[in-house]
Image 1 (tube, helix red, strand yellow):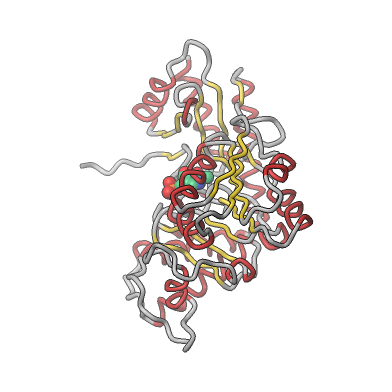
Image 2: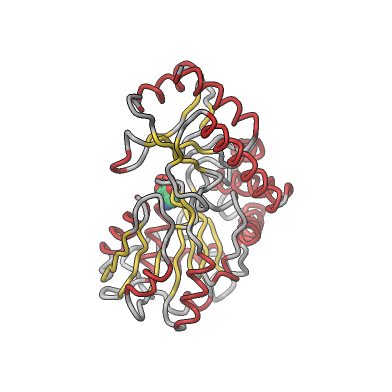
Length: 365
Ligand code: PLP
C-alpha cells in the first residue's frame, strides 16, 4: 500500500515532531542497556519539566493514555473507597467506568458537555472522598477545567483527599504546574501535544499519594511498585526486569520532549494559543458556532457545531480524500453534530490553520 501523508488535525494522534520521528528510527537499544537507562532517566526529568513537578516517580508507562487511567485507579483505589469523578465529557465518563471496575464507590458529578468542571459542586458531592478525579482538557468537548482552583480547594478542606488529573490532551500544549496546583496523580498520552506517536502513557505520582498506594494491586502488569523497581531502581539500587520496555517509543518520547524543552514550554504554549485563536477567529468569520463555552475553550482542540443541513461525515470524508486532512467527529451524543479540530504539538502552526480553513471553505461551498 502506498504511503500517504495526512495532516492529522483531529483529536489525536497528531503529526509528530520531526525529532520524535527521528527518535523512532534510531538504532534500537536493549531495555537494560546503560545508554537506554540513562535516556529513560532523562525522559523522566523532561516529563517533570513539562508537567511542573518534582515527583520522583515520573515515568512513561507502556500503553496508550487509557493505561495511565487504569494504573491510576488500580494502584490508588481500594474496594469501597469513595471516588468523586467530575464528568463533563467522554473521558470523565470513562473514569467512572474504570473506577467502578476496581471496586470504588463512585460519586459522579455530571456537568453539561462543553462546560468546565464546577469546583463547588465537586466539593459538595462528598465531604471526604479518598480521591477526586477530573479531566484537565476534555478532548471530547474542547473545554478546559481549572485544576489549580480544584486542587487548592481540596487541600484547604482536608489532607486526606488525593487529586487525580487526566492530562492526556493538556501535556505539552499548555503550561502545567502539578505541584503548585496540588495534583497528586496524573497521567497523559504521547500522541497529542507531545507530538509523538501513540504508545506511551506518561505517569506521575506524589510522595504523599505513593505512601497510600495499594501494596498488591489486582494487576501484575500495572503494579507501580514492580514497575518502579525497573524505572527508578529497587531497594538495592539495581534495575530489576519487569517487562520489556518499548525502547523505540521511549527514544521517540525522549526526543519529542527535548524538542519541546529546546523551544521552551512558555513558547510552545504561546504557539498553541496563537494557532488556536487564529482557527477560532477564522471559523467564526465563516459563520460557524463553537461548541465549548467561551472562556474555557482549549487552544489545542476546537469543537465546532456542524451547521444545519450539513452532513458531518460527508465533510470529513471530503477533507480526507480531497485534501488529506483528518478532522474528528464529535463524541457520544454529539457524534454527528460536532466536529473536533486539533492543532496539537507540531500542528500548532498558522500554516496549518490557513490550510484547514481554506479546505473547509471549499468543502462547505
Ligand atoms: N483521556 C483523554 C482526555 C483523551 O483525550 C484520551 C484519548 O483521546 C484518553 C484519555 C485515552 O487515551 P488513549 O486513547 O490513548 O488510550
